Image (cartoon, rainbow over all chains, first blue to last red; front, side, top):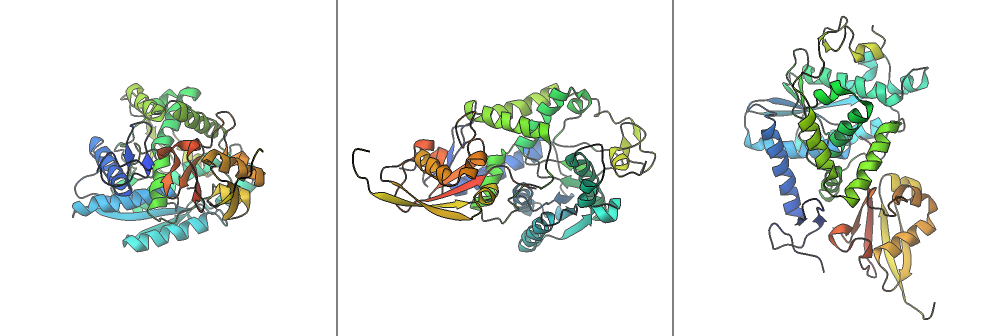
Length: 300
Length: 101
């Protein structure tokens, strides 16, 4: 027999949270995610009452879940605005399918969508980058250039915030990877609420306290159509190892991902993440005199 | 086997990497009456060996790190996990946790 929801104590539950012991019906599950995102947004002071928020949508389950939850949350804030931004990296047969799903979701919610592409911004698509001689793995290029492209898109729509769909698993993996790499600069700069840096739209991660299992479950039970296959160029070996490790730990020790995330918050510094200068090419804040986006797109 | 058991039919819907590994969006498999989720997953992997590589984590001997498994719309860990009893005509959904994006 299906246990009763521990929240409303009426409906049959459909989801169990091992880390908290809650058993939730569909309505309470949705409500609990919305509440958690609201609390996270408040905790990190992510938005102003009249923020114009660019939501990075990729067509995956995280970004579409984020768009849906923020749309619901911002209904109570009449002066705030949502606009979706998406990046076409140029991965034939993969990103084009995902982007059509993103467009569909935006249409359903009546949210404007602004699209930018690697080709127009950097003169090269991911298909072209993947096919050429290069020093780094494809994910290294894509991660840096996508981040820059999202920033460009957010600026193009006059947004003062850029919300991305990074979930608890993503941020916990990031914390552990930085520890394993000994990257004290990134450990120092860990901030899911983002920072205001001149030259960049402030990036915020409202799903940073929502486990990936829950964004997946939310997207599925709410009938969101999302891109369900991994990128054909995905080859980030260390992240895959860390993801596997954390997923196993979460099964045997529920709550591990939250612990790693909170540890990241405890050990971070207040030093500003190592941004010390400005890029000589694009003028944005950089660790040295050339930012990674200009370096990897050959502008330096 | 000491006695005859009636067969139950279970519909399995596959999503994302599971669909790709099986080359199909779903299939119907037969298991013995009284089977539990673990038996269905075993039968599934027997029938589609490629699925075992992406579904089951051999180190912890479980599908739990890689997938959400829904039994008639309820996430399996909210029931009895791998020991969840399966009924004739039940529907299983195998949903990978890690997707593209």
